[in-house]
Amino acid sequence: MSLSLSKDFFISLPEDLQIESITYLSKSPKQQQESDLWLLTTALVSKMWRDDPLLQVERQKAATRLRQRASLSLCLHKMQIVTTFPGELRQLFRAHRQPMNRLAILDLGGRTGNTDYIDFLCPEEVPSGLMLFKDALGRSGIAFKLQEQGETHVQTIFQRYPGIRGLWVSGGRNVRLRNSNEACYKFPYIGPPTEMVRVVQELFEGAIPGVRIAHPEEQFNCSCCLIC
Image (tube, rainbow, N blue to C red; front, side, top):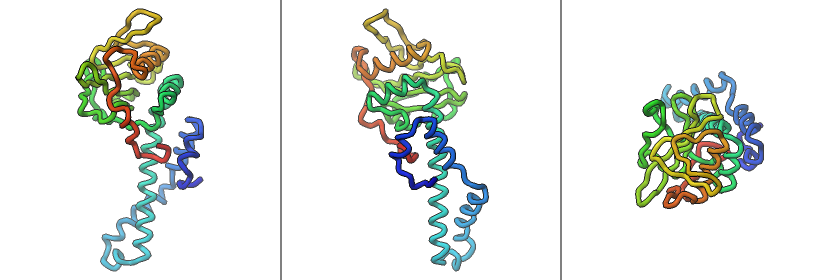
């Protein structure tokens, strides 16, 4: 399998096979990585080695391989985050032309809020309207930059406990979410995945009066991997 395979090939695969393919491609023999690093250092050995045409070509190839491996590692990290979300939610994002594997990853910097709630993000920290993240405890989540009554704020939806996919909560401003079939319910408690899907669907469809996702046209700013 070659790194030159097109991104269309990866996109056409089921997500579990995407992960397997990327995992395979990102793994290379330790000797190869050490050899590539050694080739890069030849430019420091002497002027003769630095100016040697053959070594210059080999250094360029080595640098490309190292960048590809780093890119694939980032891509694998993203796909591992994406697959922690329920399949219904991933389908909902695709239905609204916001595929999760094309969203950028937000770096939380190891921070957690009171009682481990992720409720501390400021709009300036979230460059896109929708971003994925994984916190220091290993919990996956989504950051929504929302505009409400002329103000911009960040609302998160994330796993309440590491490794438990059946309970989702939110952090940020308390937004009232309405559904025509049942009474009003609120953040921060969301509950099982079916409720989380309903919450996100309301955000996508603008069902919350006066609340919308900010800058939906700026979602796809990730260029970390082959399938984006």
